[in-house]
Image 1 (spheres, rainbow, N blue to C red):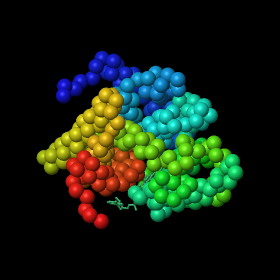
Image 2: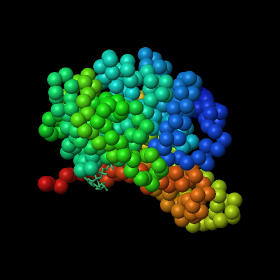
Image 3: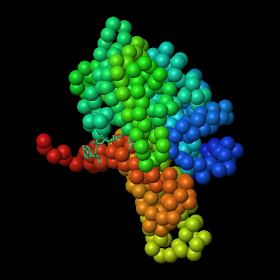
Image 4: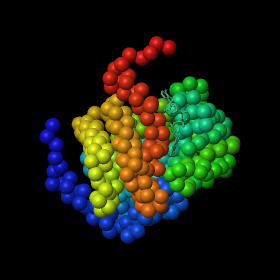
Length: 378
Ligand SMILES: Cc1cc2nc3c(=O)[nH]c(=O)nc-3n(C[C@H](O)[C@H](O)[C@H](O)COP(=O)(O)OP(=O)(O)OC[C@H]3O[C@@H](n4cnc5c(N)ncnc54)[C@H](O)[C@@H]3O)c2cc1C
C-alpha cells in the first residue's frame, strides 16, 4: 500500500492545529485533566461551541445535521489532533463519534430534531448507561428493568462506572424489557427526570469522572425508546464499532512519549536502556496508528469494521501501557505533580484496558474472529 496524505488532508490538519493553538488556554497542559471534572465539562462546552462555529466539530456528519459530509479520514485527522492535545472535547467525543450518528440511523424524527442539533452545536453532554455492578463484560446479563405502564415505561435499577453522569444532560440507557439478549432496549433519558440519583465514585483519572446512577420508579414516555423494544443489541453493536476505531488514543501516547524523551535529553539521561525502551514504545504507537488507518481505509470503501477493529483497540491499549511504563521507569518525577499531562496520560493508560470494554474481551474476539482459533467446547 502506498500511503500518503493529500494536499487537502494536510491543509485540514493544519487548520485543526491552528484552531487548537488559538483556542486552548496558554496553561492548558498544566490544568487538571480529569476528563469528567466539572471544570472540564464546562470547558468542553465552550471549546466545542467554538469548534462548531468553525465547522470543525462534526465535519463528517451529513450536511442535513450540521456537517459537510466529509470522509472518514477527515474525522480521524480531527480526532488525532484532539487526542494529541489531551482531548479538549471532553465527554463530547462520544456525541461526535457514535451517539449522534446512531440517532441519525435509528432515532425517530422527534428524537433527531430534539437531540442532534444541540450536539452539532457542542452544547450538550451525554453519558452511557451500560455497565451494572454484576454486568460489565457480560452486558447481556444486565438487570435494570423498564416495565411498560400505559404510554410510559417505569425504570428501576442501577448503573455503575458511568462517565460524565454528574454533568450529563441525557443518558443513553440500556434497560431490560424482556428476558435474554433480545430483551434489552435503549432509552434516551434526560438526566433531570424524577427518580434518578447520581453518586460520584472516587477515581484515579480525576474528580467527577465515574459514577453510580440509581433509577427508582423513573417514568419515561414510550417515545423515549430508541428503535424498537429489544433492538438494543443490534443498535449498540453498530454504535460501538464506530467508537472502537474512533478513538486515536495513540496520538496522545505518542506525544507524551516524545515529551518524556525530551526531558531525558535535556537532563543528559537519554542512554542506551531508555533509547531501546522508548523505541519499542514508539514502534507500538506507530503500529497502532497503521492498524487504525487500515480500518479507516475499510470504512472509506464502505466496509463495516470487522474483527480488525478489536486488534486496533488492543494495540492501542498496549501502546498506551508501554509509554506509561517508560515514563514510570525513566521520568517518575513527572508523575509526582511536575507534569500534569504526563500524569493524566499515565492515569488514562491504567484504565484504558477496562473503560469501553475490557481488553481481554478484545483478545477473545481476535482469537475467535480474526485468527479463527477453535473455541473450547463448553
Ligand atoms: C474509567 C472508566 C470509565 C467507564 N465508563 C463507563 C461508562 O461511561 N459507561 C458504562 O456503561 N461503563 C463504563 N465503564 C465500565 C466498563 O465498561 C467496565 O468496567 C468493563 O466493561 C468491564 O466490566 P466489569 O468492570 O464489570 O469487569 P468484569 O467484566 O467483571 O471483568 C473483570 C475481569 O475479568 C475479565 N473477564 C471478564 N470476562 C472475561 C472473558 N469472557 N474472557 C476473558 N476475561 C474476562 C476482564 O477482562 C477483567 O479483567 C467504565 C470503566 C472505567 C474503568
